[in-house]
Length: 379
Image 1 (spheres, helix red, strand yellow):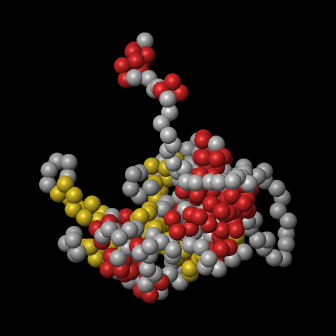
Image 2 (cartoon, rainbow, N blue to C red):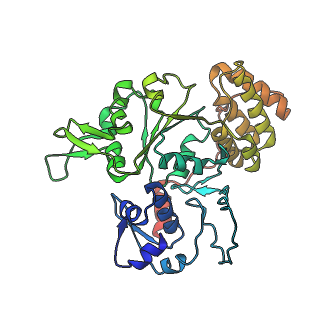
């Protein structure tokens, strides 16, 4: 990839351009291009379909091949003399944290004897749609964002309409109306990945607009825009998220049958410990999760709630963080969560975080008034 860009320093190439010239899949080329950009070894431009070009570091990058998922910023190894072997060695597994587009780190987990991000990319290259399912807060969206830097996302709910996928008419700045394409059309025309988050909250009639793009036709008709036919470019890929325990989430047969691979996502409590979350709280979450599995409870803290606990504890202290953990539990499970916290932490009583009695005026630290703050800035 770097050699191709270095040999054409005056050109800006799309993913499709490079895939055709290199003879590799769009997914592999896309990940390599984003890795070069994130390392500062290539430039990216274009607000729609991205284009890539060489910079001052590209030629040096082309001298040594490095295999790593986008965002890891692995150091380039020094060239070594290759040994002749009768069988090809398997490429090293990339298990280090991956930086997502928003800057957060994602810690890969094992899936089918592979890092999960690598498994998803292989499925994308083979055009095998994936449905990720599990409780909210277990990292489904984080995994997809780490695997696909070119991701577009549709956040599904009961109000999602066909226009939220395909697009609709909007008022133009200069007057009149123009048709604004939706994320489905953009992903199809640019060969990008599309995440339908909380897909099972979307009406089946709305989801039906997606299916022609996923089957052998790989095209849709935009009836609202002159019946225009949109064809999917290579690299277009659909992955969906499903939260089985969420009220209103229904996994229909029509939706399930479109996803050949369905992967259960749960919280990695060992990772929570590695992230230095209070071990007592992690133990509480793990025990509650076991009760959920056997049907005794309906809720247990997932990684999202444990990370929130850690942040709240750093700001407000342990007691407030524990009270908040109890308070965010569903009302029907709140007593069981409180009992588990009391036993693990050793407190006598714990209740949801709530306001108490009014403080005397002398104990309240007054924020600066608008006028005084303005005078301070003026000085």
